[in-house]
Every structure is written in C-alpha cells, then in structure tokens.
View 1 (cartoon, helix red, strand yellow):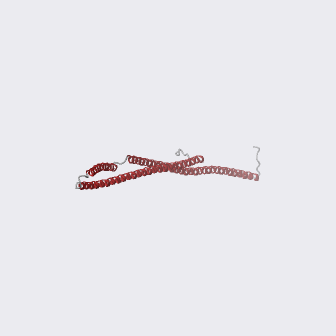
View 2 (cartoon, one colour):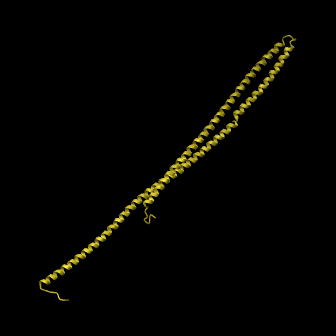
View 3 (cartoon, rainbow, N blue to C red):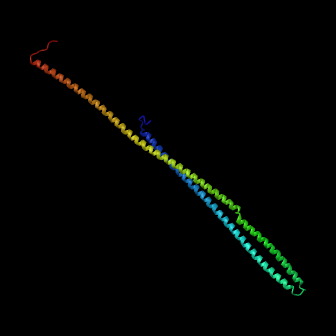
Length: 257
C-alpha cells in the first residue's frame, strides 16, 4: 500500500493512537496483575515453607527432648543398678557375717536370702529395662520418626512448588518482556507512521503548490499571448490609420466600392 503512494489520514492516525494507548493500558494492567500474582504466590509458598520448617524444628526439638528423657531414665536405671549391686554386696557381707553367729539365727538368714533373691530379680528386671531403653535410644537415633519424614516430604513439596512458581514467574517476566517489546515496536511504528504522514502532508502541499504555480504560469503565458495579439492589432490599426490620414492629406476620397 505504501508503494502505491498511500499515506494515512488524520482519522486513521487517531485510531492508531487510541489503539496504542489501549495496548499500553492493557500491558500495564497485565503487568500489575502478574506482579500481584507473583508476589502473592511467593508470599504463600515462603509462608508454607517457613511453617513446615518450623514444624520440623519443633518435632526435632520434641524428639531431642524425648531422647534426653530416655537418657535420664537410663541414668536413673544405672544408678538403681549400682545401688542394688551395693545392696547385694552388703547383703553378701551380712550373710558371711551371719554364718559366724549362732546357728539359732536361721530365720534372719532365710529373710536375708529372700531379700537377696528379690534384689537379684529386681537387678535382672532393671538390666532388661536398661537394655530396652538402650535399644529405644539406638532406634530413635538411627531412624527418623515418621512425622519428621512427612515434614521433610512436605518441605520438599513446598520447595518444588516454590521452584515451579519461580519458573512461572520467569515465564511471566518473559511474557511481559514480549508485551513491552511489542509495545515499543508499536510506538516506533506509530512514530514512523507519524513522520511518514508529515512527509506525505509536506509532499502533498508541495505538489499542490507546484500545480498551482503551473496553473498561474499557464494563465500568465495565455495573458501575455493575448497582450501580444492586442499589441499586434493595435499596431495594424495604427498603420491603417496613418495610411488613411496620408490619403486624406492628398485629397483622396474613397470610391463607392
């Protein structure tokens, strides 16, 4: 169309300017919308990640406290075993001492033996509890609790969702960059069209002035030609008048013809 000499009119330029303004407003609104979505998504996932991390830390503190409780219980069991062993040694010493006394003290000896057997049973029970506590501590230290695993999985999911949100934000930034580039190209095209329109107006004005000048030159040439014809006729009439005056001075009179 431009090769055929077309140039946009003022109305078409107004339409282009309005369309350009609409595109600019749409791009700004889209950019604000995506920016708000991006900020909201980042805030949500960061809050979820912080919450999951806090829950994991609380669970870890609880498990550490539980392990500390088991350690205290094991320490208590060790102290109880030491006391029982000391009591056993004392009872053995008492039994050895009782053999040196009168044989009539068999009732006290039987009571000591019963206490010794009960102490042995209690020591065996405490040793079993101590072994169970050690196994529980080893199990707690070796394998993480299910809640901690679930929290780690939730934290990993939150991180993956945050990464996906980051990728979506990057795609949104690329789309916004594309829209801004299209907007810049539209502005440049509008500027080029405006300059072309101005040049077209100047060319049209120059052509109109040139055509008007040609018309006036043609009119001037025609007027000059008429002036020359009038001058030639005037000269002819002047010559005829001089001839008639010369004949009149010689007494000439015209014939009937």
